[in-house]
Image (cartoon, rainbow, N blue to C red; front, side):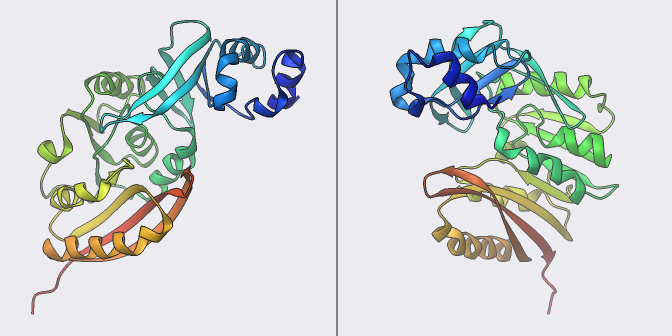
Length: 277
């Protein structure tokens, strides 16, 4: 039975079908649900019904607002089930220990997380500038066997990142650094940089270019913007690259709709050292 149909059967006498959610995102044993404003007064009833939909679900939380700040605090409220929301999430062979009510773990990015290791070549050094609990870095280390330096500004996420490196047995490949990536990034070391942050990511691009080996490499910059801003972003990439004596070529991939008229893109930037004349 489909999720929406299940809820309709469970709540037919109490909640209007039009306001019931169509889906949820499962992180470990925690179901994360987005409810319409009109449905929030029924959040507890909906949550208790969701517990019966899938035996993997032990806790249900509803979104109360947008993710906040550079430390990416999600806004969720537990409405049903087990109050312990620290969990272990399995994804394509990688294990992630985290609390999804306190740390962002987007279901909409899973294809990109799985895709990224396919781009990485053996022997590369990859710097993940916004590592969180290791969403990109762990997949890269486990599947490509490249070395990864993972930088995270949020101390709570960093603690889980350290735990996840051990849990996935990639301590020989992956190193974690706590701090602001603008201040603690390595210089002249990386073949590839992952920038998995969505808001004003372009301001960190100079730091990413400083991180690359002198001859250049790749930067994968995530950004949530209106489509109309793409050309401006490409122009800015070109300007920043020239300032750092690189020429750039850019590929653009659409990941998902982030919000009305805002789209999550990845800018795949190839940097090559400018030839001296």
